[in-house]
Length: 578
Ligand SMILES: [Zn+2]
Image (cartoon, rainbow, N blue to C red; front, top):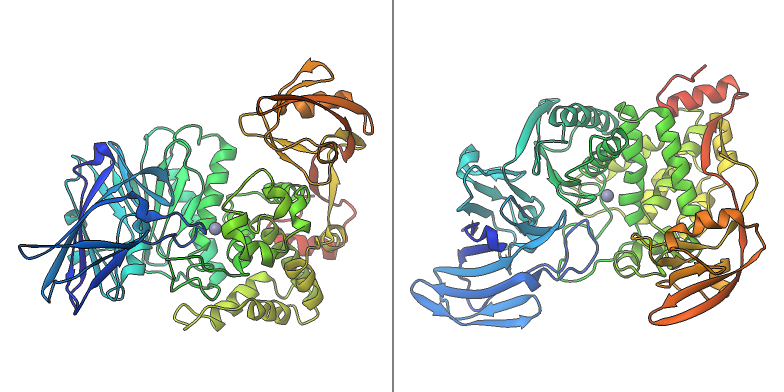
């Protein structure tokens, strides 16, 4: 079958322009082509077609008329066999892990934002050739180099889905390679050389790969590439089948805590090579990219992965047992201060992510809950329950392995939520159904102290007593109230997200200073907050509420029984410190 071939010229990199020439076989009748509306792994309609311009088509020497069908599809007629050549330009200036960007220092070709698909030819082999690369630039991608020659910058994908699931990073890259279990891995980083220790990255990631491979019983890919995009404002990562794009700040990453967090991010995205990319809920591959695809099981893709990023990092010695416990306690604090966890269950938060999580406003924490965070907590609670009920014989690891056997990568469809819950219940030896119902389809929190006690752990506050509480969250720049928590003191008094605090009881204050200023107040006291709402100045009287002081911490109990200590040791992958 004639492949669909793209030549991508980077001659316009300083103008953020990619010039693309596509050649494919002309079908009988009209040829339609289009751009995806979203990209797998990021559940938001991004309208990638908006950056396409100057679409032209020809057959041999003859120009063909191009007609636009809708916001993201085009049609041309009259080719009558032979080959069609399409040309278009992409304005690529949105640096993130999920959008294309090109400038004078690097190019990230994020497939869904660069390559049009040809209707009816999506299953054919696809080829990409990069041309006009600036002097000294290299290319890193999980795509297969044609004839094994990486320096020719020609790559092949088995079909369109595989093409757009393998981003291409170009620039003056720093790369390092390692093998694990005979499988080659590459780390390629853009950005300044200073502040990113490539050898330390390799050591950490190699251990992460080994720990994840042990858990699942082998690596599922023939090659894996970690693409690191180091620039201001690029955060998070995006999973792909045989690669991942990891954001990283250009500065400050050598600070130990930030470095650890970054390695945990790498563990998260790598874990998706199994959970999410191959073991996946029904509907998440093959993809329908023209419109939203809803699933109530996104919590399993992201929540399970958000728990296991920590567990794998612990087993890889990237996190200590204490750091693992500190992180989970912080997670409980965060989820328990989200009123929206009572409004949408994990299943509902998953289903509605397109409109209630990826599109955010000041009310978001009141209407939904992060299925990453709460999903991680529920996975942890289930892991503890399985371990306790089976006398340490089994853990959530066994759920993952059972699902992997039941839904191998070549399975004709993904799993349904009921099938996942069935496996969880079966691995636990039965009896977990009511908890699954309450935690996944209901809005109940796991009851932590009884879950933790058999492992010699308990939750406690770093300080005792209560403090005055207003019930607002400051915006990132510290000037405004980002969110007013539903049913809290500020909510009842009529404060609003977006309000700009000016004074507290007549003294100047910024939103970011409110919590510290309220240290001088007692719960139940009244105060007056002066705020700007748009151009209006308002005085709002608030009766302060109460919140426990200090941070939530996860502690080992000194009086833990030997049996509990042994359970903790297996879970935390560490000896009980004497
Ligand atoms: Zn993820």
